[in-house]
Length: 80
Image 1 (tube, rainbow, N blue to C red):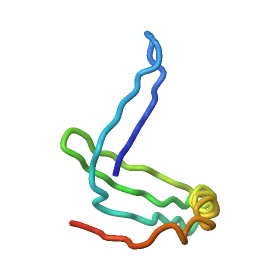
Image 2 (image 1 turned 60 degrees about the horizontal axis):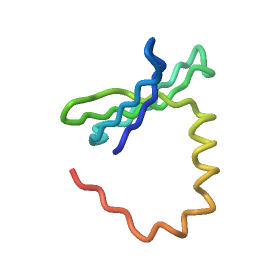
Image 3 (image 1 turned 90 degrees about the horizontal axis):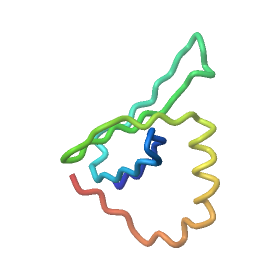
Image 4 (image 1 turned 30 degrees about the vertical axis):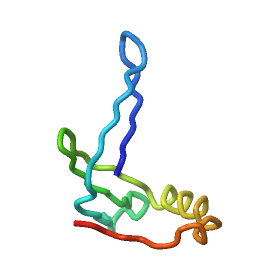
């Protein structure tokens, strides 16, 4: 996984780039507050690690944007 982040810093925009592997995907459900559901993608690289939290609406938006391009993906290989 490649992660690129831009952050506003007092001296300007700070750009960071990191590589890592997806270690875990968690689905966080809240029965009392269903609007607070989230999908967490946990990653770890050589010099970085973190968690990317996505709402169901964001996942749906990502899926809709790549749905028409699924035929371009010939194969998937997961290496652990």
